[in-house]
Image 1 (cartoon, rainbow, N blue to C red):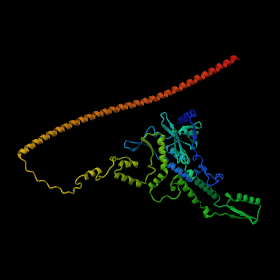
Image 2: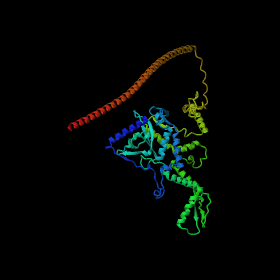
Image 3: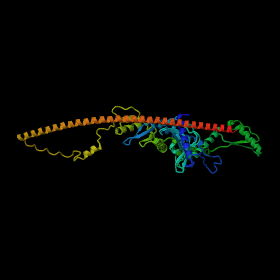
Image 4: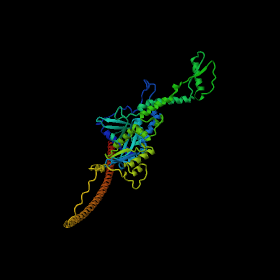
Length: 546
C-alpha cells in the first residue's frame, strides 16, 4: 500500500476506534436520503409498474446531459487554483505557503489538479454531493485530498447536532476495513441546492430526468426504425376468415423471411393474401422537435446556454466576452465560489489567505478588444505598461514600472489650490506702479550697509548651525541603522534556534513514540511469557494430579 494511504487508513481507524469506545454516549442517526439515492420518478400514474423509470446512470448516457456535465466540469477544471494573500492595504495578491500550496498543486498521488476538480464537479452534478476526504500529516496540516464515491458516503447527525460521515471501503482513497465513521472536520462536503435536508444536495438530474429519459426513448425507437430500413410495419390481409393457428404461422413466416436484414426480398403471396404497409404521418414522425425540446429542458436545468452543447444556433452578435460572462454568471459562478469556500474552510486557511480560481482564461475577451482595453487602461493611468505586458505574458521593459499620464493633467488638489486665489484665472487689471521713492541721504546709506552686514553674519551663523544639525542627524541615522542591522541578525539567529528546537522536538517526539512502542512490545512479550508460564504450571499441576 502507498505510504500516504497507510496514513489515511491508520487515521480513519483511530477515529473509528474512538467512536466505538464512546458509542454508549453518542447516538447517530441517518439524514433524509431523498435526492442522493437512485432516482425513480413516475412520468404518469402507474409508470413505475409499467417499467417506465428515470435511472441516473442511464440518464447520464443521454447526449445533452453528458455534454452539459462534461462541459461544466472541464471548464472549471482548466482554471488554475491560486492561493491569495491580503496585504496591509487590503489588496489580494497571489502567494505561496509550504502548508497550503503543495496540496493545491497536487491534491493526491493519482490525480492532477485538473482531474481532481473535474471529478469533484462531476460528483456534485451527478449526485448532488461531493465528498472530499482529507489526509493530514503529524502537524495536522492537510497534505492530500481524495474525492469519494458519493454512493459510499452517508451523512449522520448526533443527538447534540454534530455531523459525522459514514464511509464504506474505498481502497483508492485509503478507506480500509468496511464502514468507518468520522467527524465532519475530516470531510469537505460540497452540495448542490438542498431541497429536502440541509446535508443532502439534489442533482439537476432530479429535475431533468424525465426529459432525458424521453429523449433516450425517442433515440432508441428511432434507431429501431432505421434498422428497419426506415420502413414501418404492415399487415397481411386475406379475403376471408382464417383460423388463429394459420394467422400465427403466417406472421412467424413473414417475420422470419421479410423483416430486419431480410427487408427488400420478394414475397410471393397466394390464397388472396395481400400486404398493406402502415404509414406514419409527418406530425407523428417529426422527432427532431421533440428531441430539441428535451435537450433545451436539460440545458435549462444545468443552466447551460443551449448553443454551447450544440442545441440551437449560436447568438448572432460577435461579443465573446459577453457570452462567456453570461455563461459564467448563470452556470459556473455558484459552483466555483462554492468550491472556493469549501477549500478555504476545509484547509483551515488563516484570515489573510483565501483560495481563488483564475478566471482570466475563462472570461478572456477577443484579441482586438483586449488590446484596446489595455491601451485605455495604460493611457488613463490605471495600469503601468509592464502590468499590461504581464497580462499578455510579455517581459517587462525598462521604464514601464510606473503608471503614466499626460503632463497637462492636474491633480484635484492643485486645481483646488488655484481656485482658492482671489483671481484664479488672472482676469483682473494690474494695479498701477507706485511712484519712485526719493533718493536716500548718505547717512541712511551707511546705516543700511551696517544693517546688511549684521544680517549676513546672522545668516552665516544659521547656516553653520544647520550644517551641524545635519551632521548630527546623519550620525544618529547611522547608529540607528547599525542597531537595526544588529537586531535583524539577532532575530535571524533566534529564528534559526527556534527552527532547530522544532526539529529537535520532532526528533524527540519520534524517539518517544519509538520508545513507547518498544515498551508496549516488551509489555506484550512479558504478558505472553507470563501466560505461557501459567499454562505450563497448570499443565504440570494437572499431570501431578493424574
